[in-house]
Image (tube, rainbow, N blue to C red; front, side):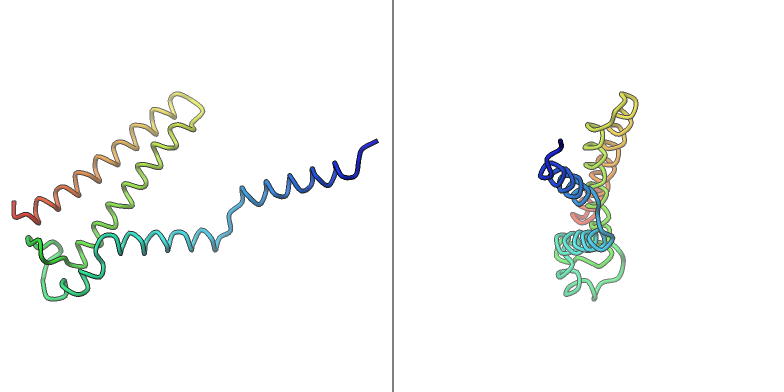
Amino acid sequence: MINPSTISLIIIHNTSNWMLTSTSKYITIASVLYLVAFFAFASGLVNSIIEGGRSKGIIVPSRSIQTIGETTVIVVILFMGMFGAYLLYSSGKAASSKSQWSFLIGGFTVLIIALTVGFSIIKIKMGG
């Protein structure tokens, strides 16, 4: 005979596992908006609003002025870095060796591109 408490425990376990693995559309949208806002403020949004309105061009070769274009480029660089890190994380969870190498090479490639663009912006800002 099956104990009724065992059945309820199995039902609770299955429903709680379902709740942990499924994501709501609203939670996904909220988390993406949070990341965009965090990256925008981390890349100098307030400074670019205050200082960048006076200058023309996307990247100004001055360390004291930051434009909205620079902030946008830096936000894209941060998202590229996050995506590269996610690909590296996915390489550890991939089932086949071919998938692991694909994710690993893709992750490092995206990270190197993001670093190259970031250092290029720094070089322009330093006047070089």
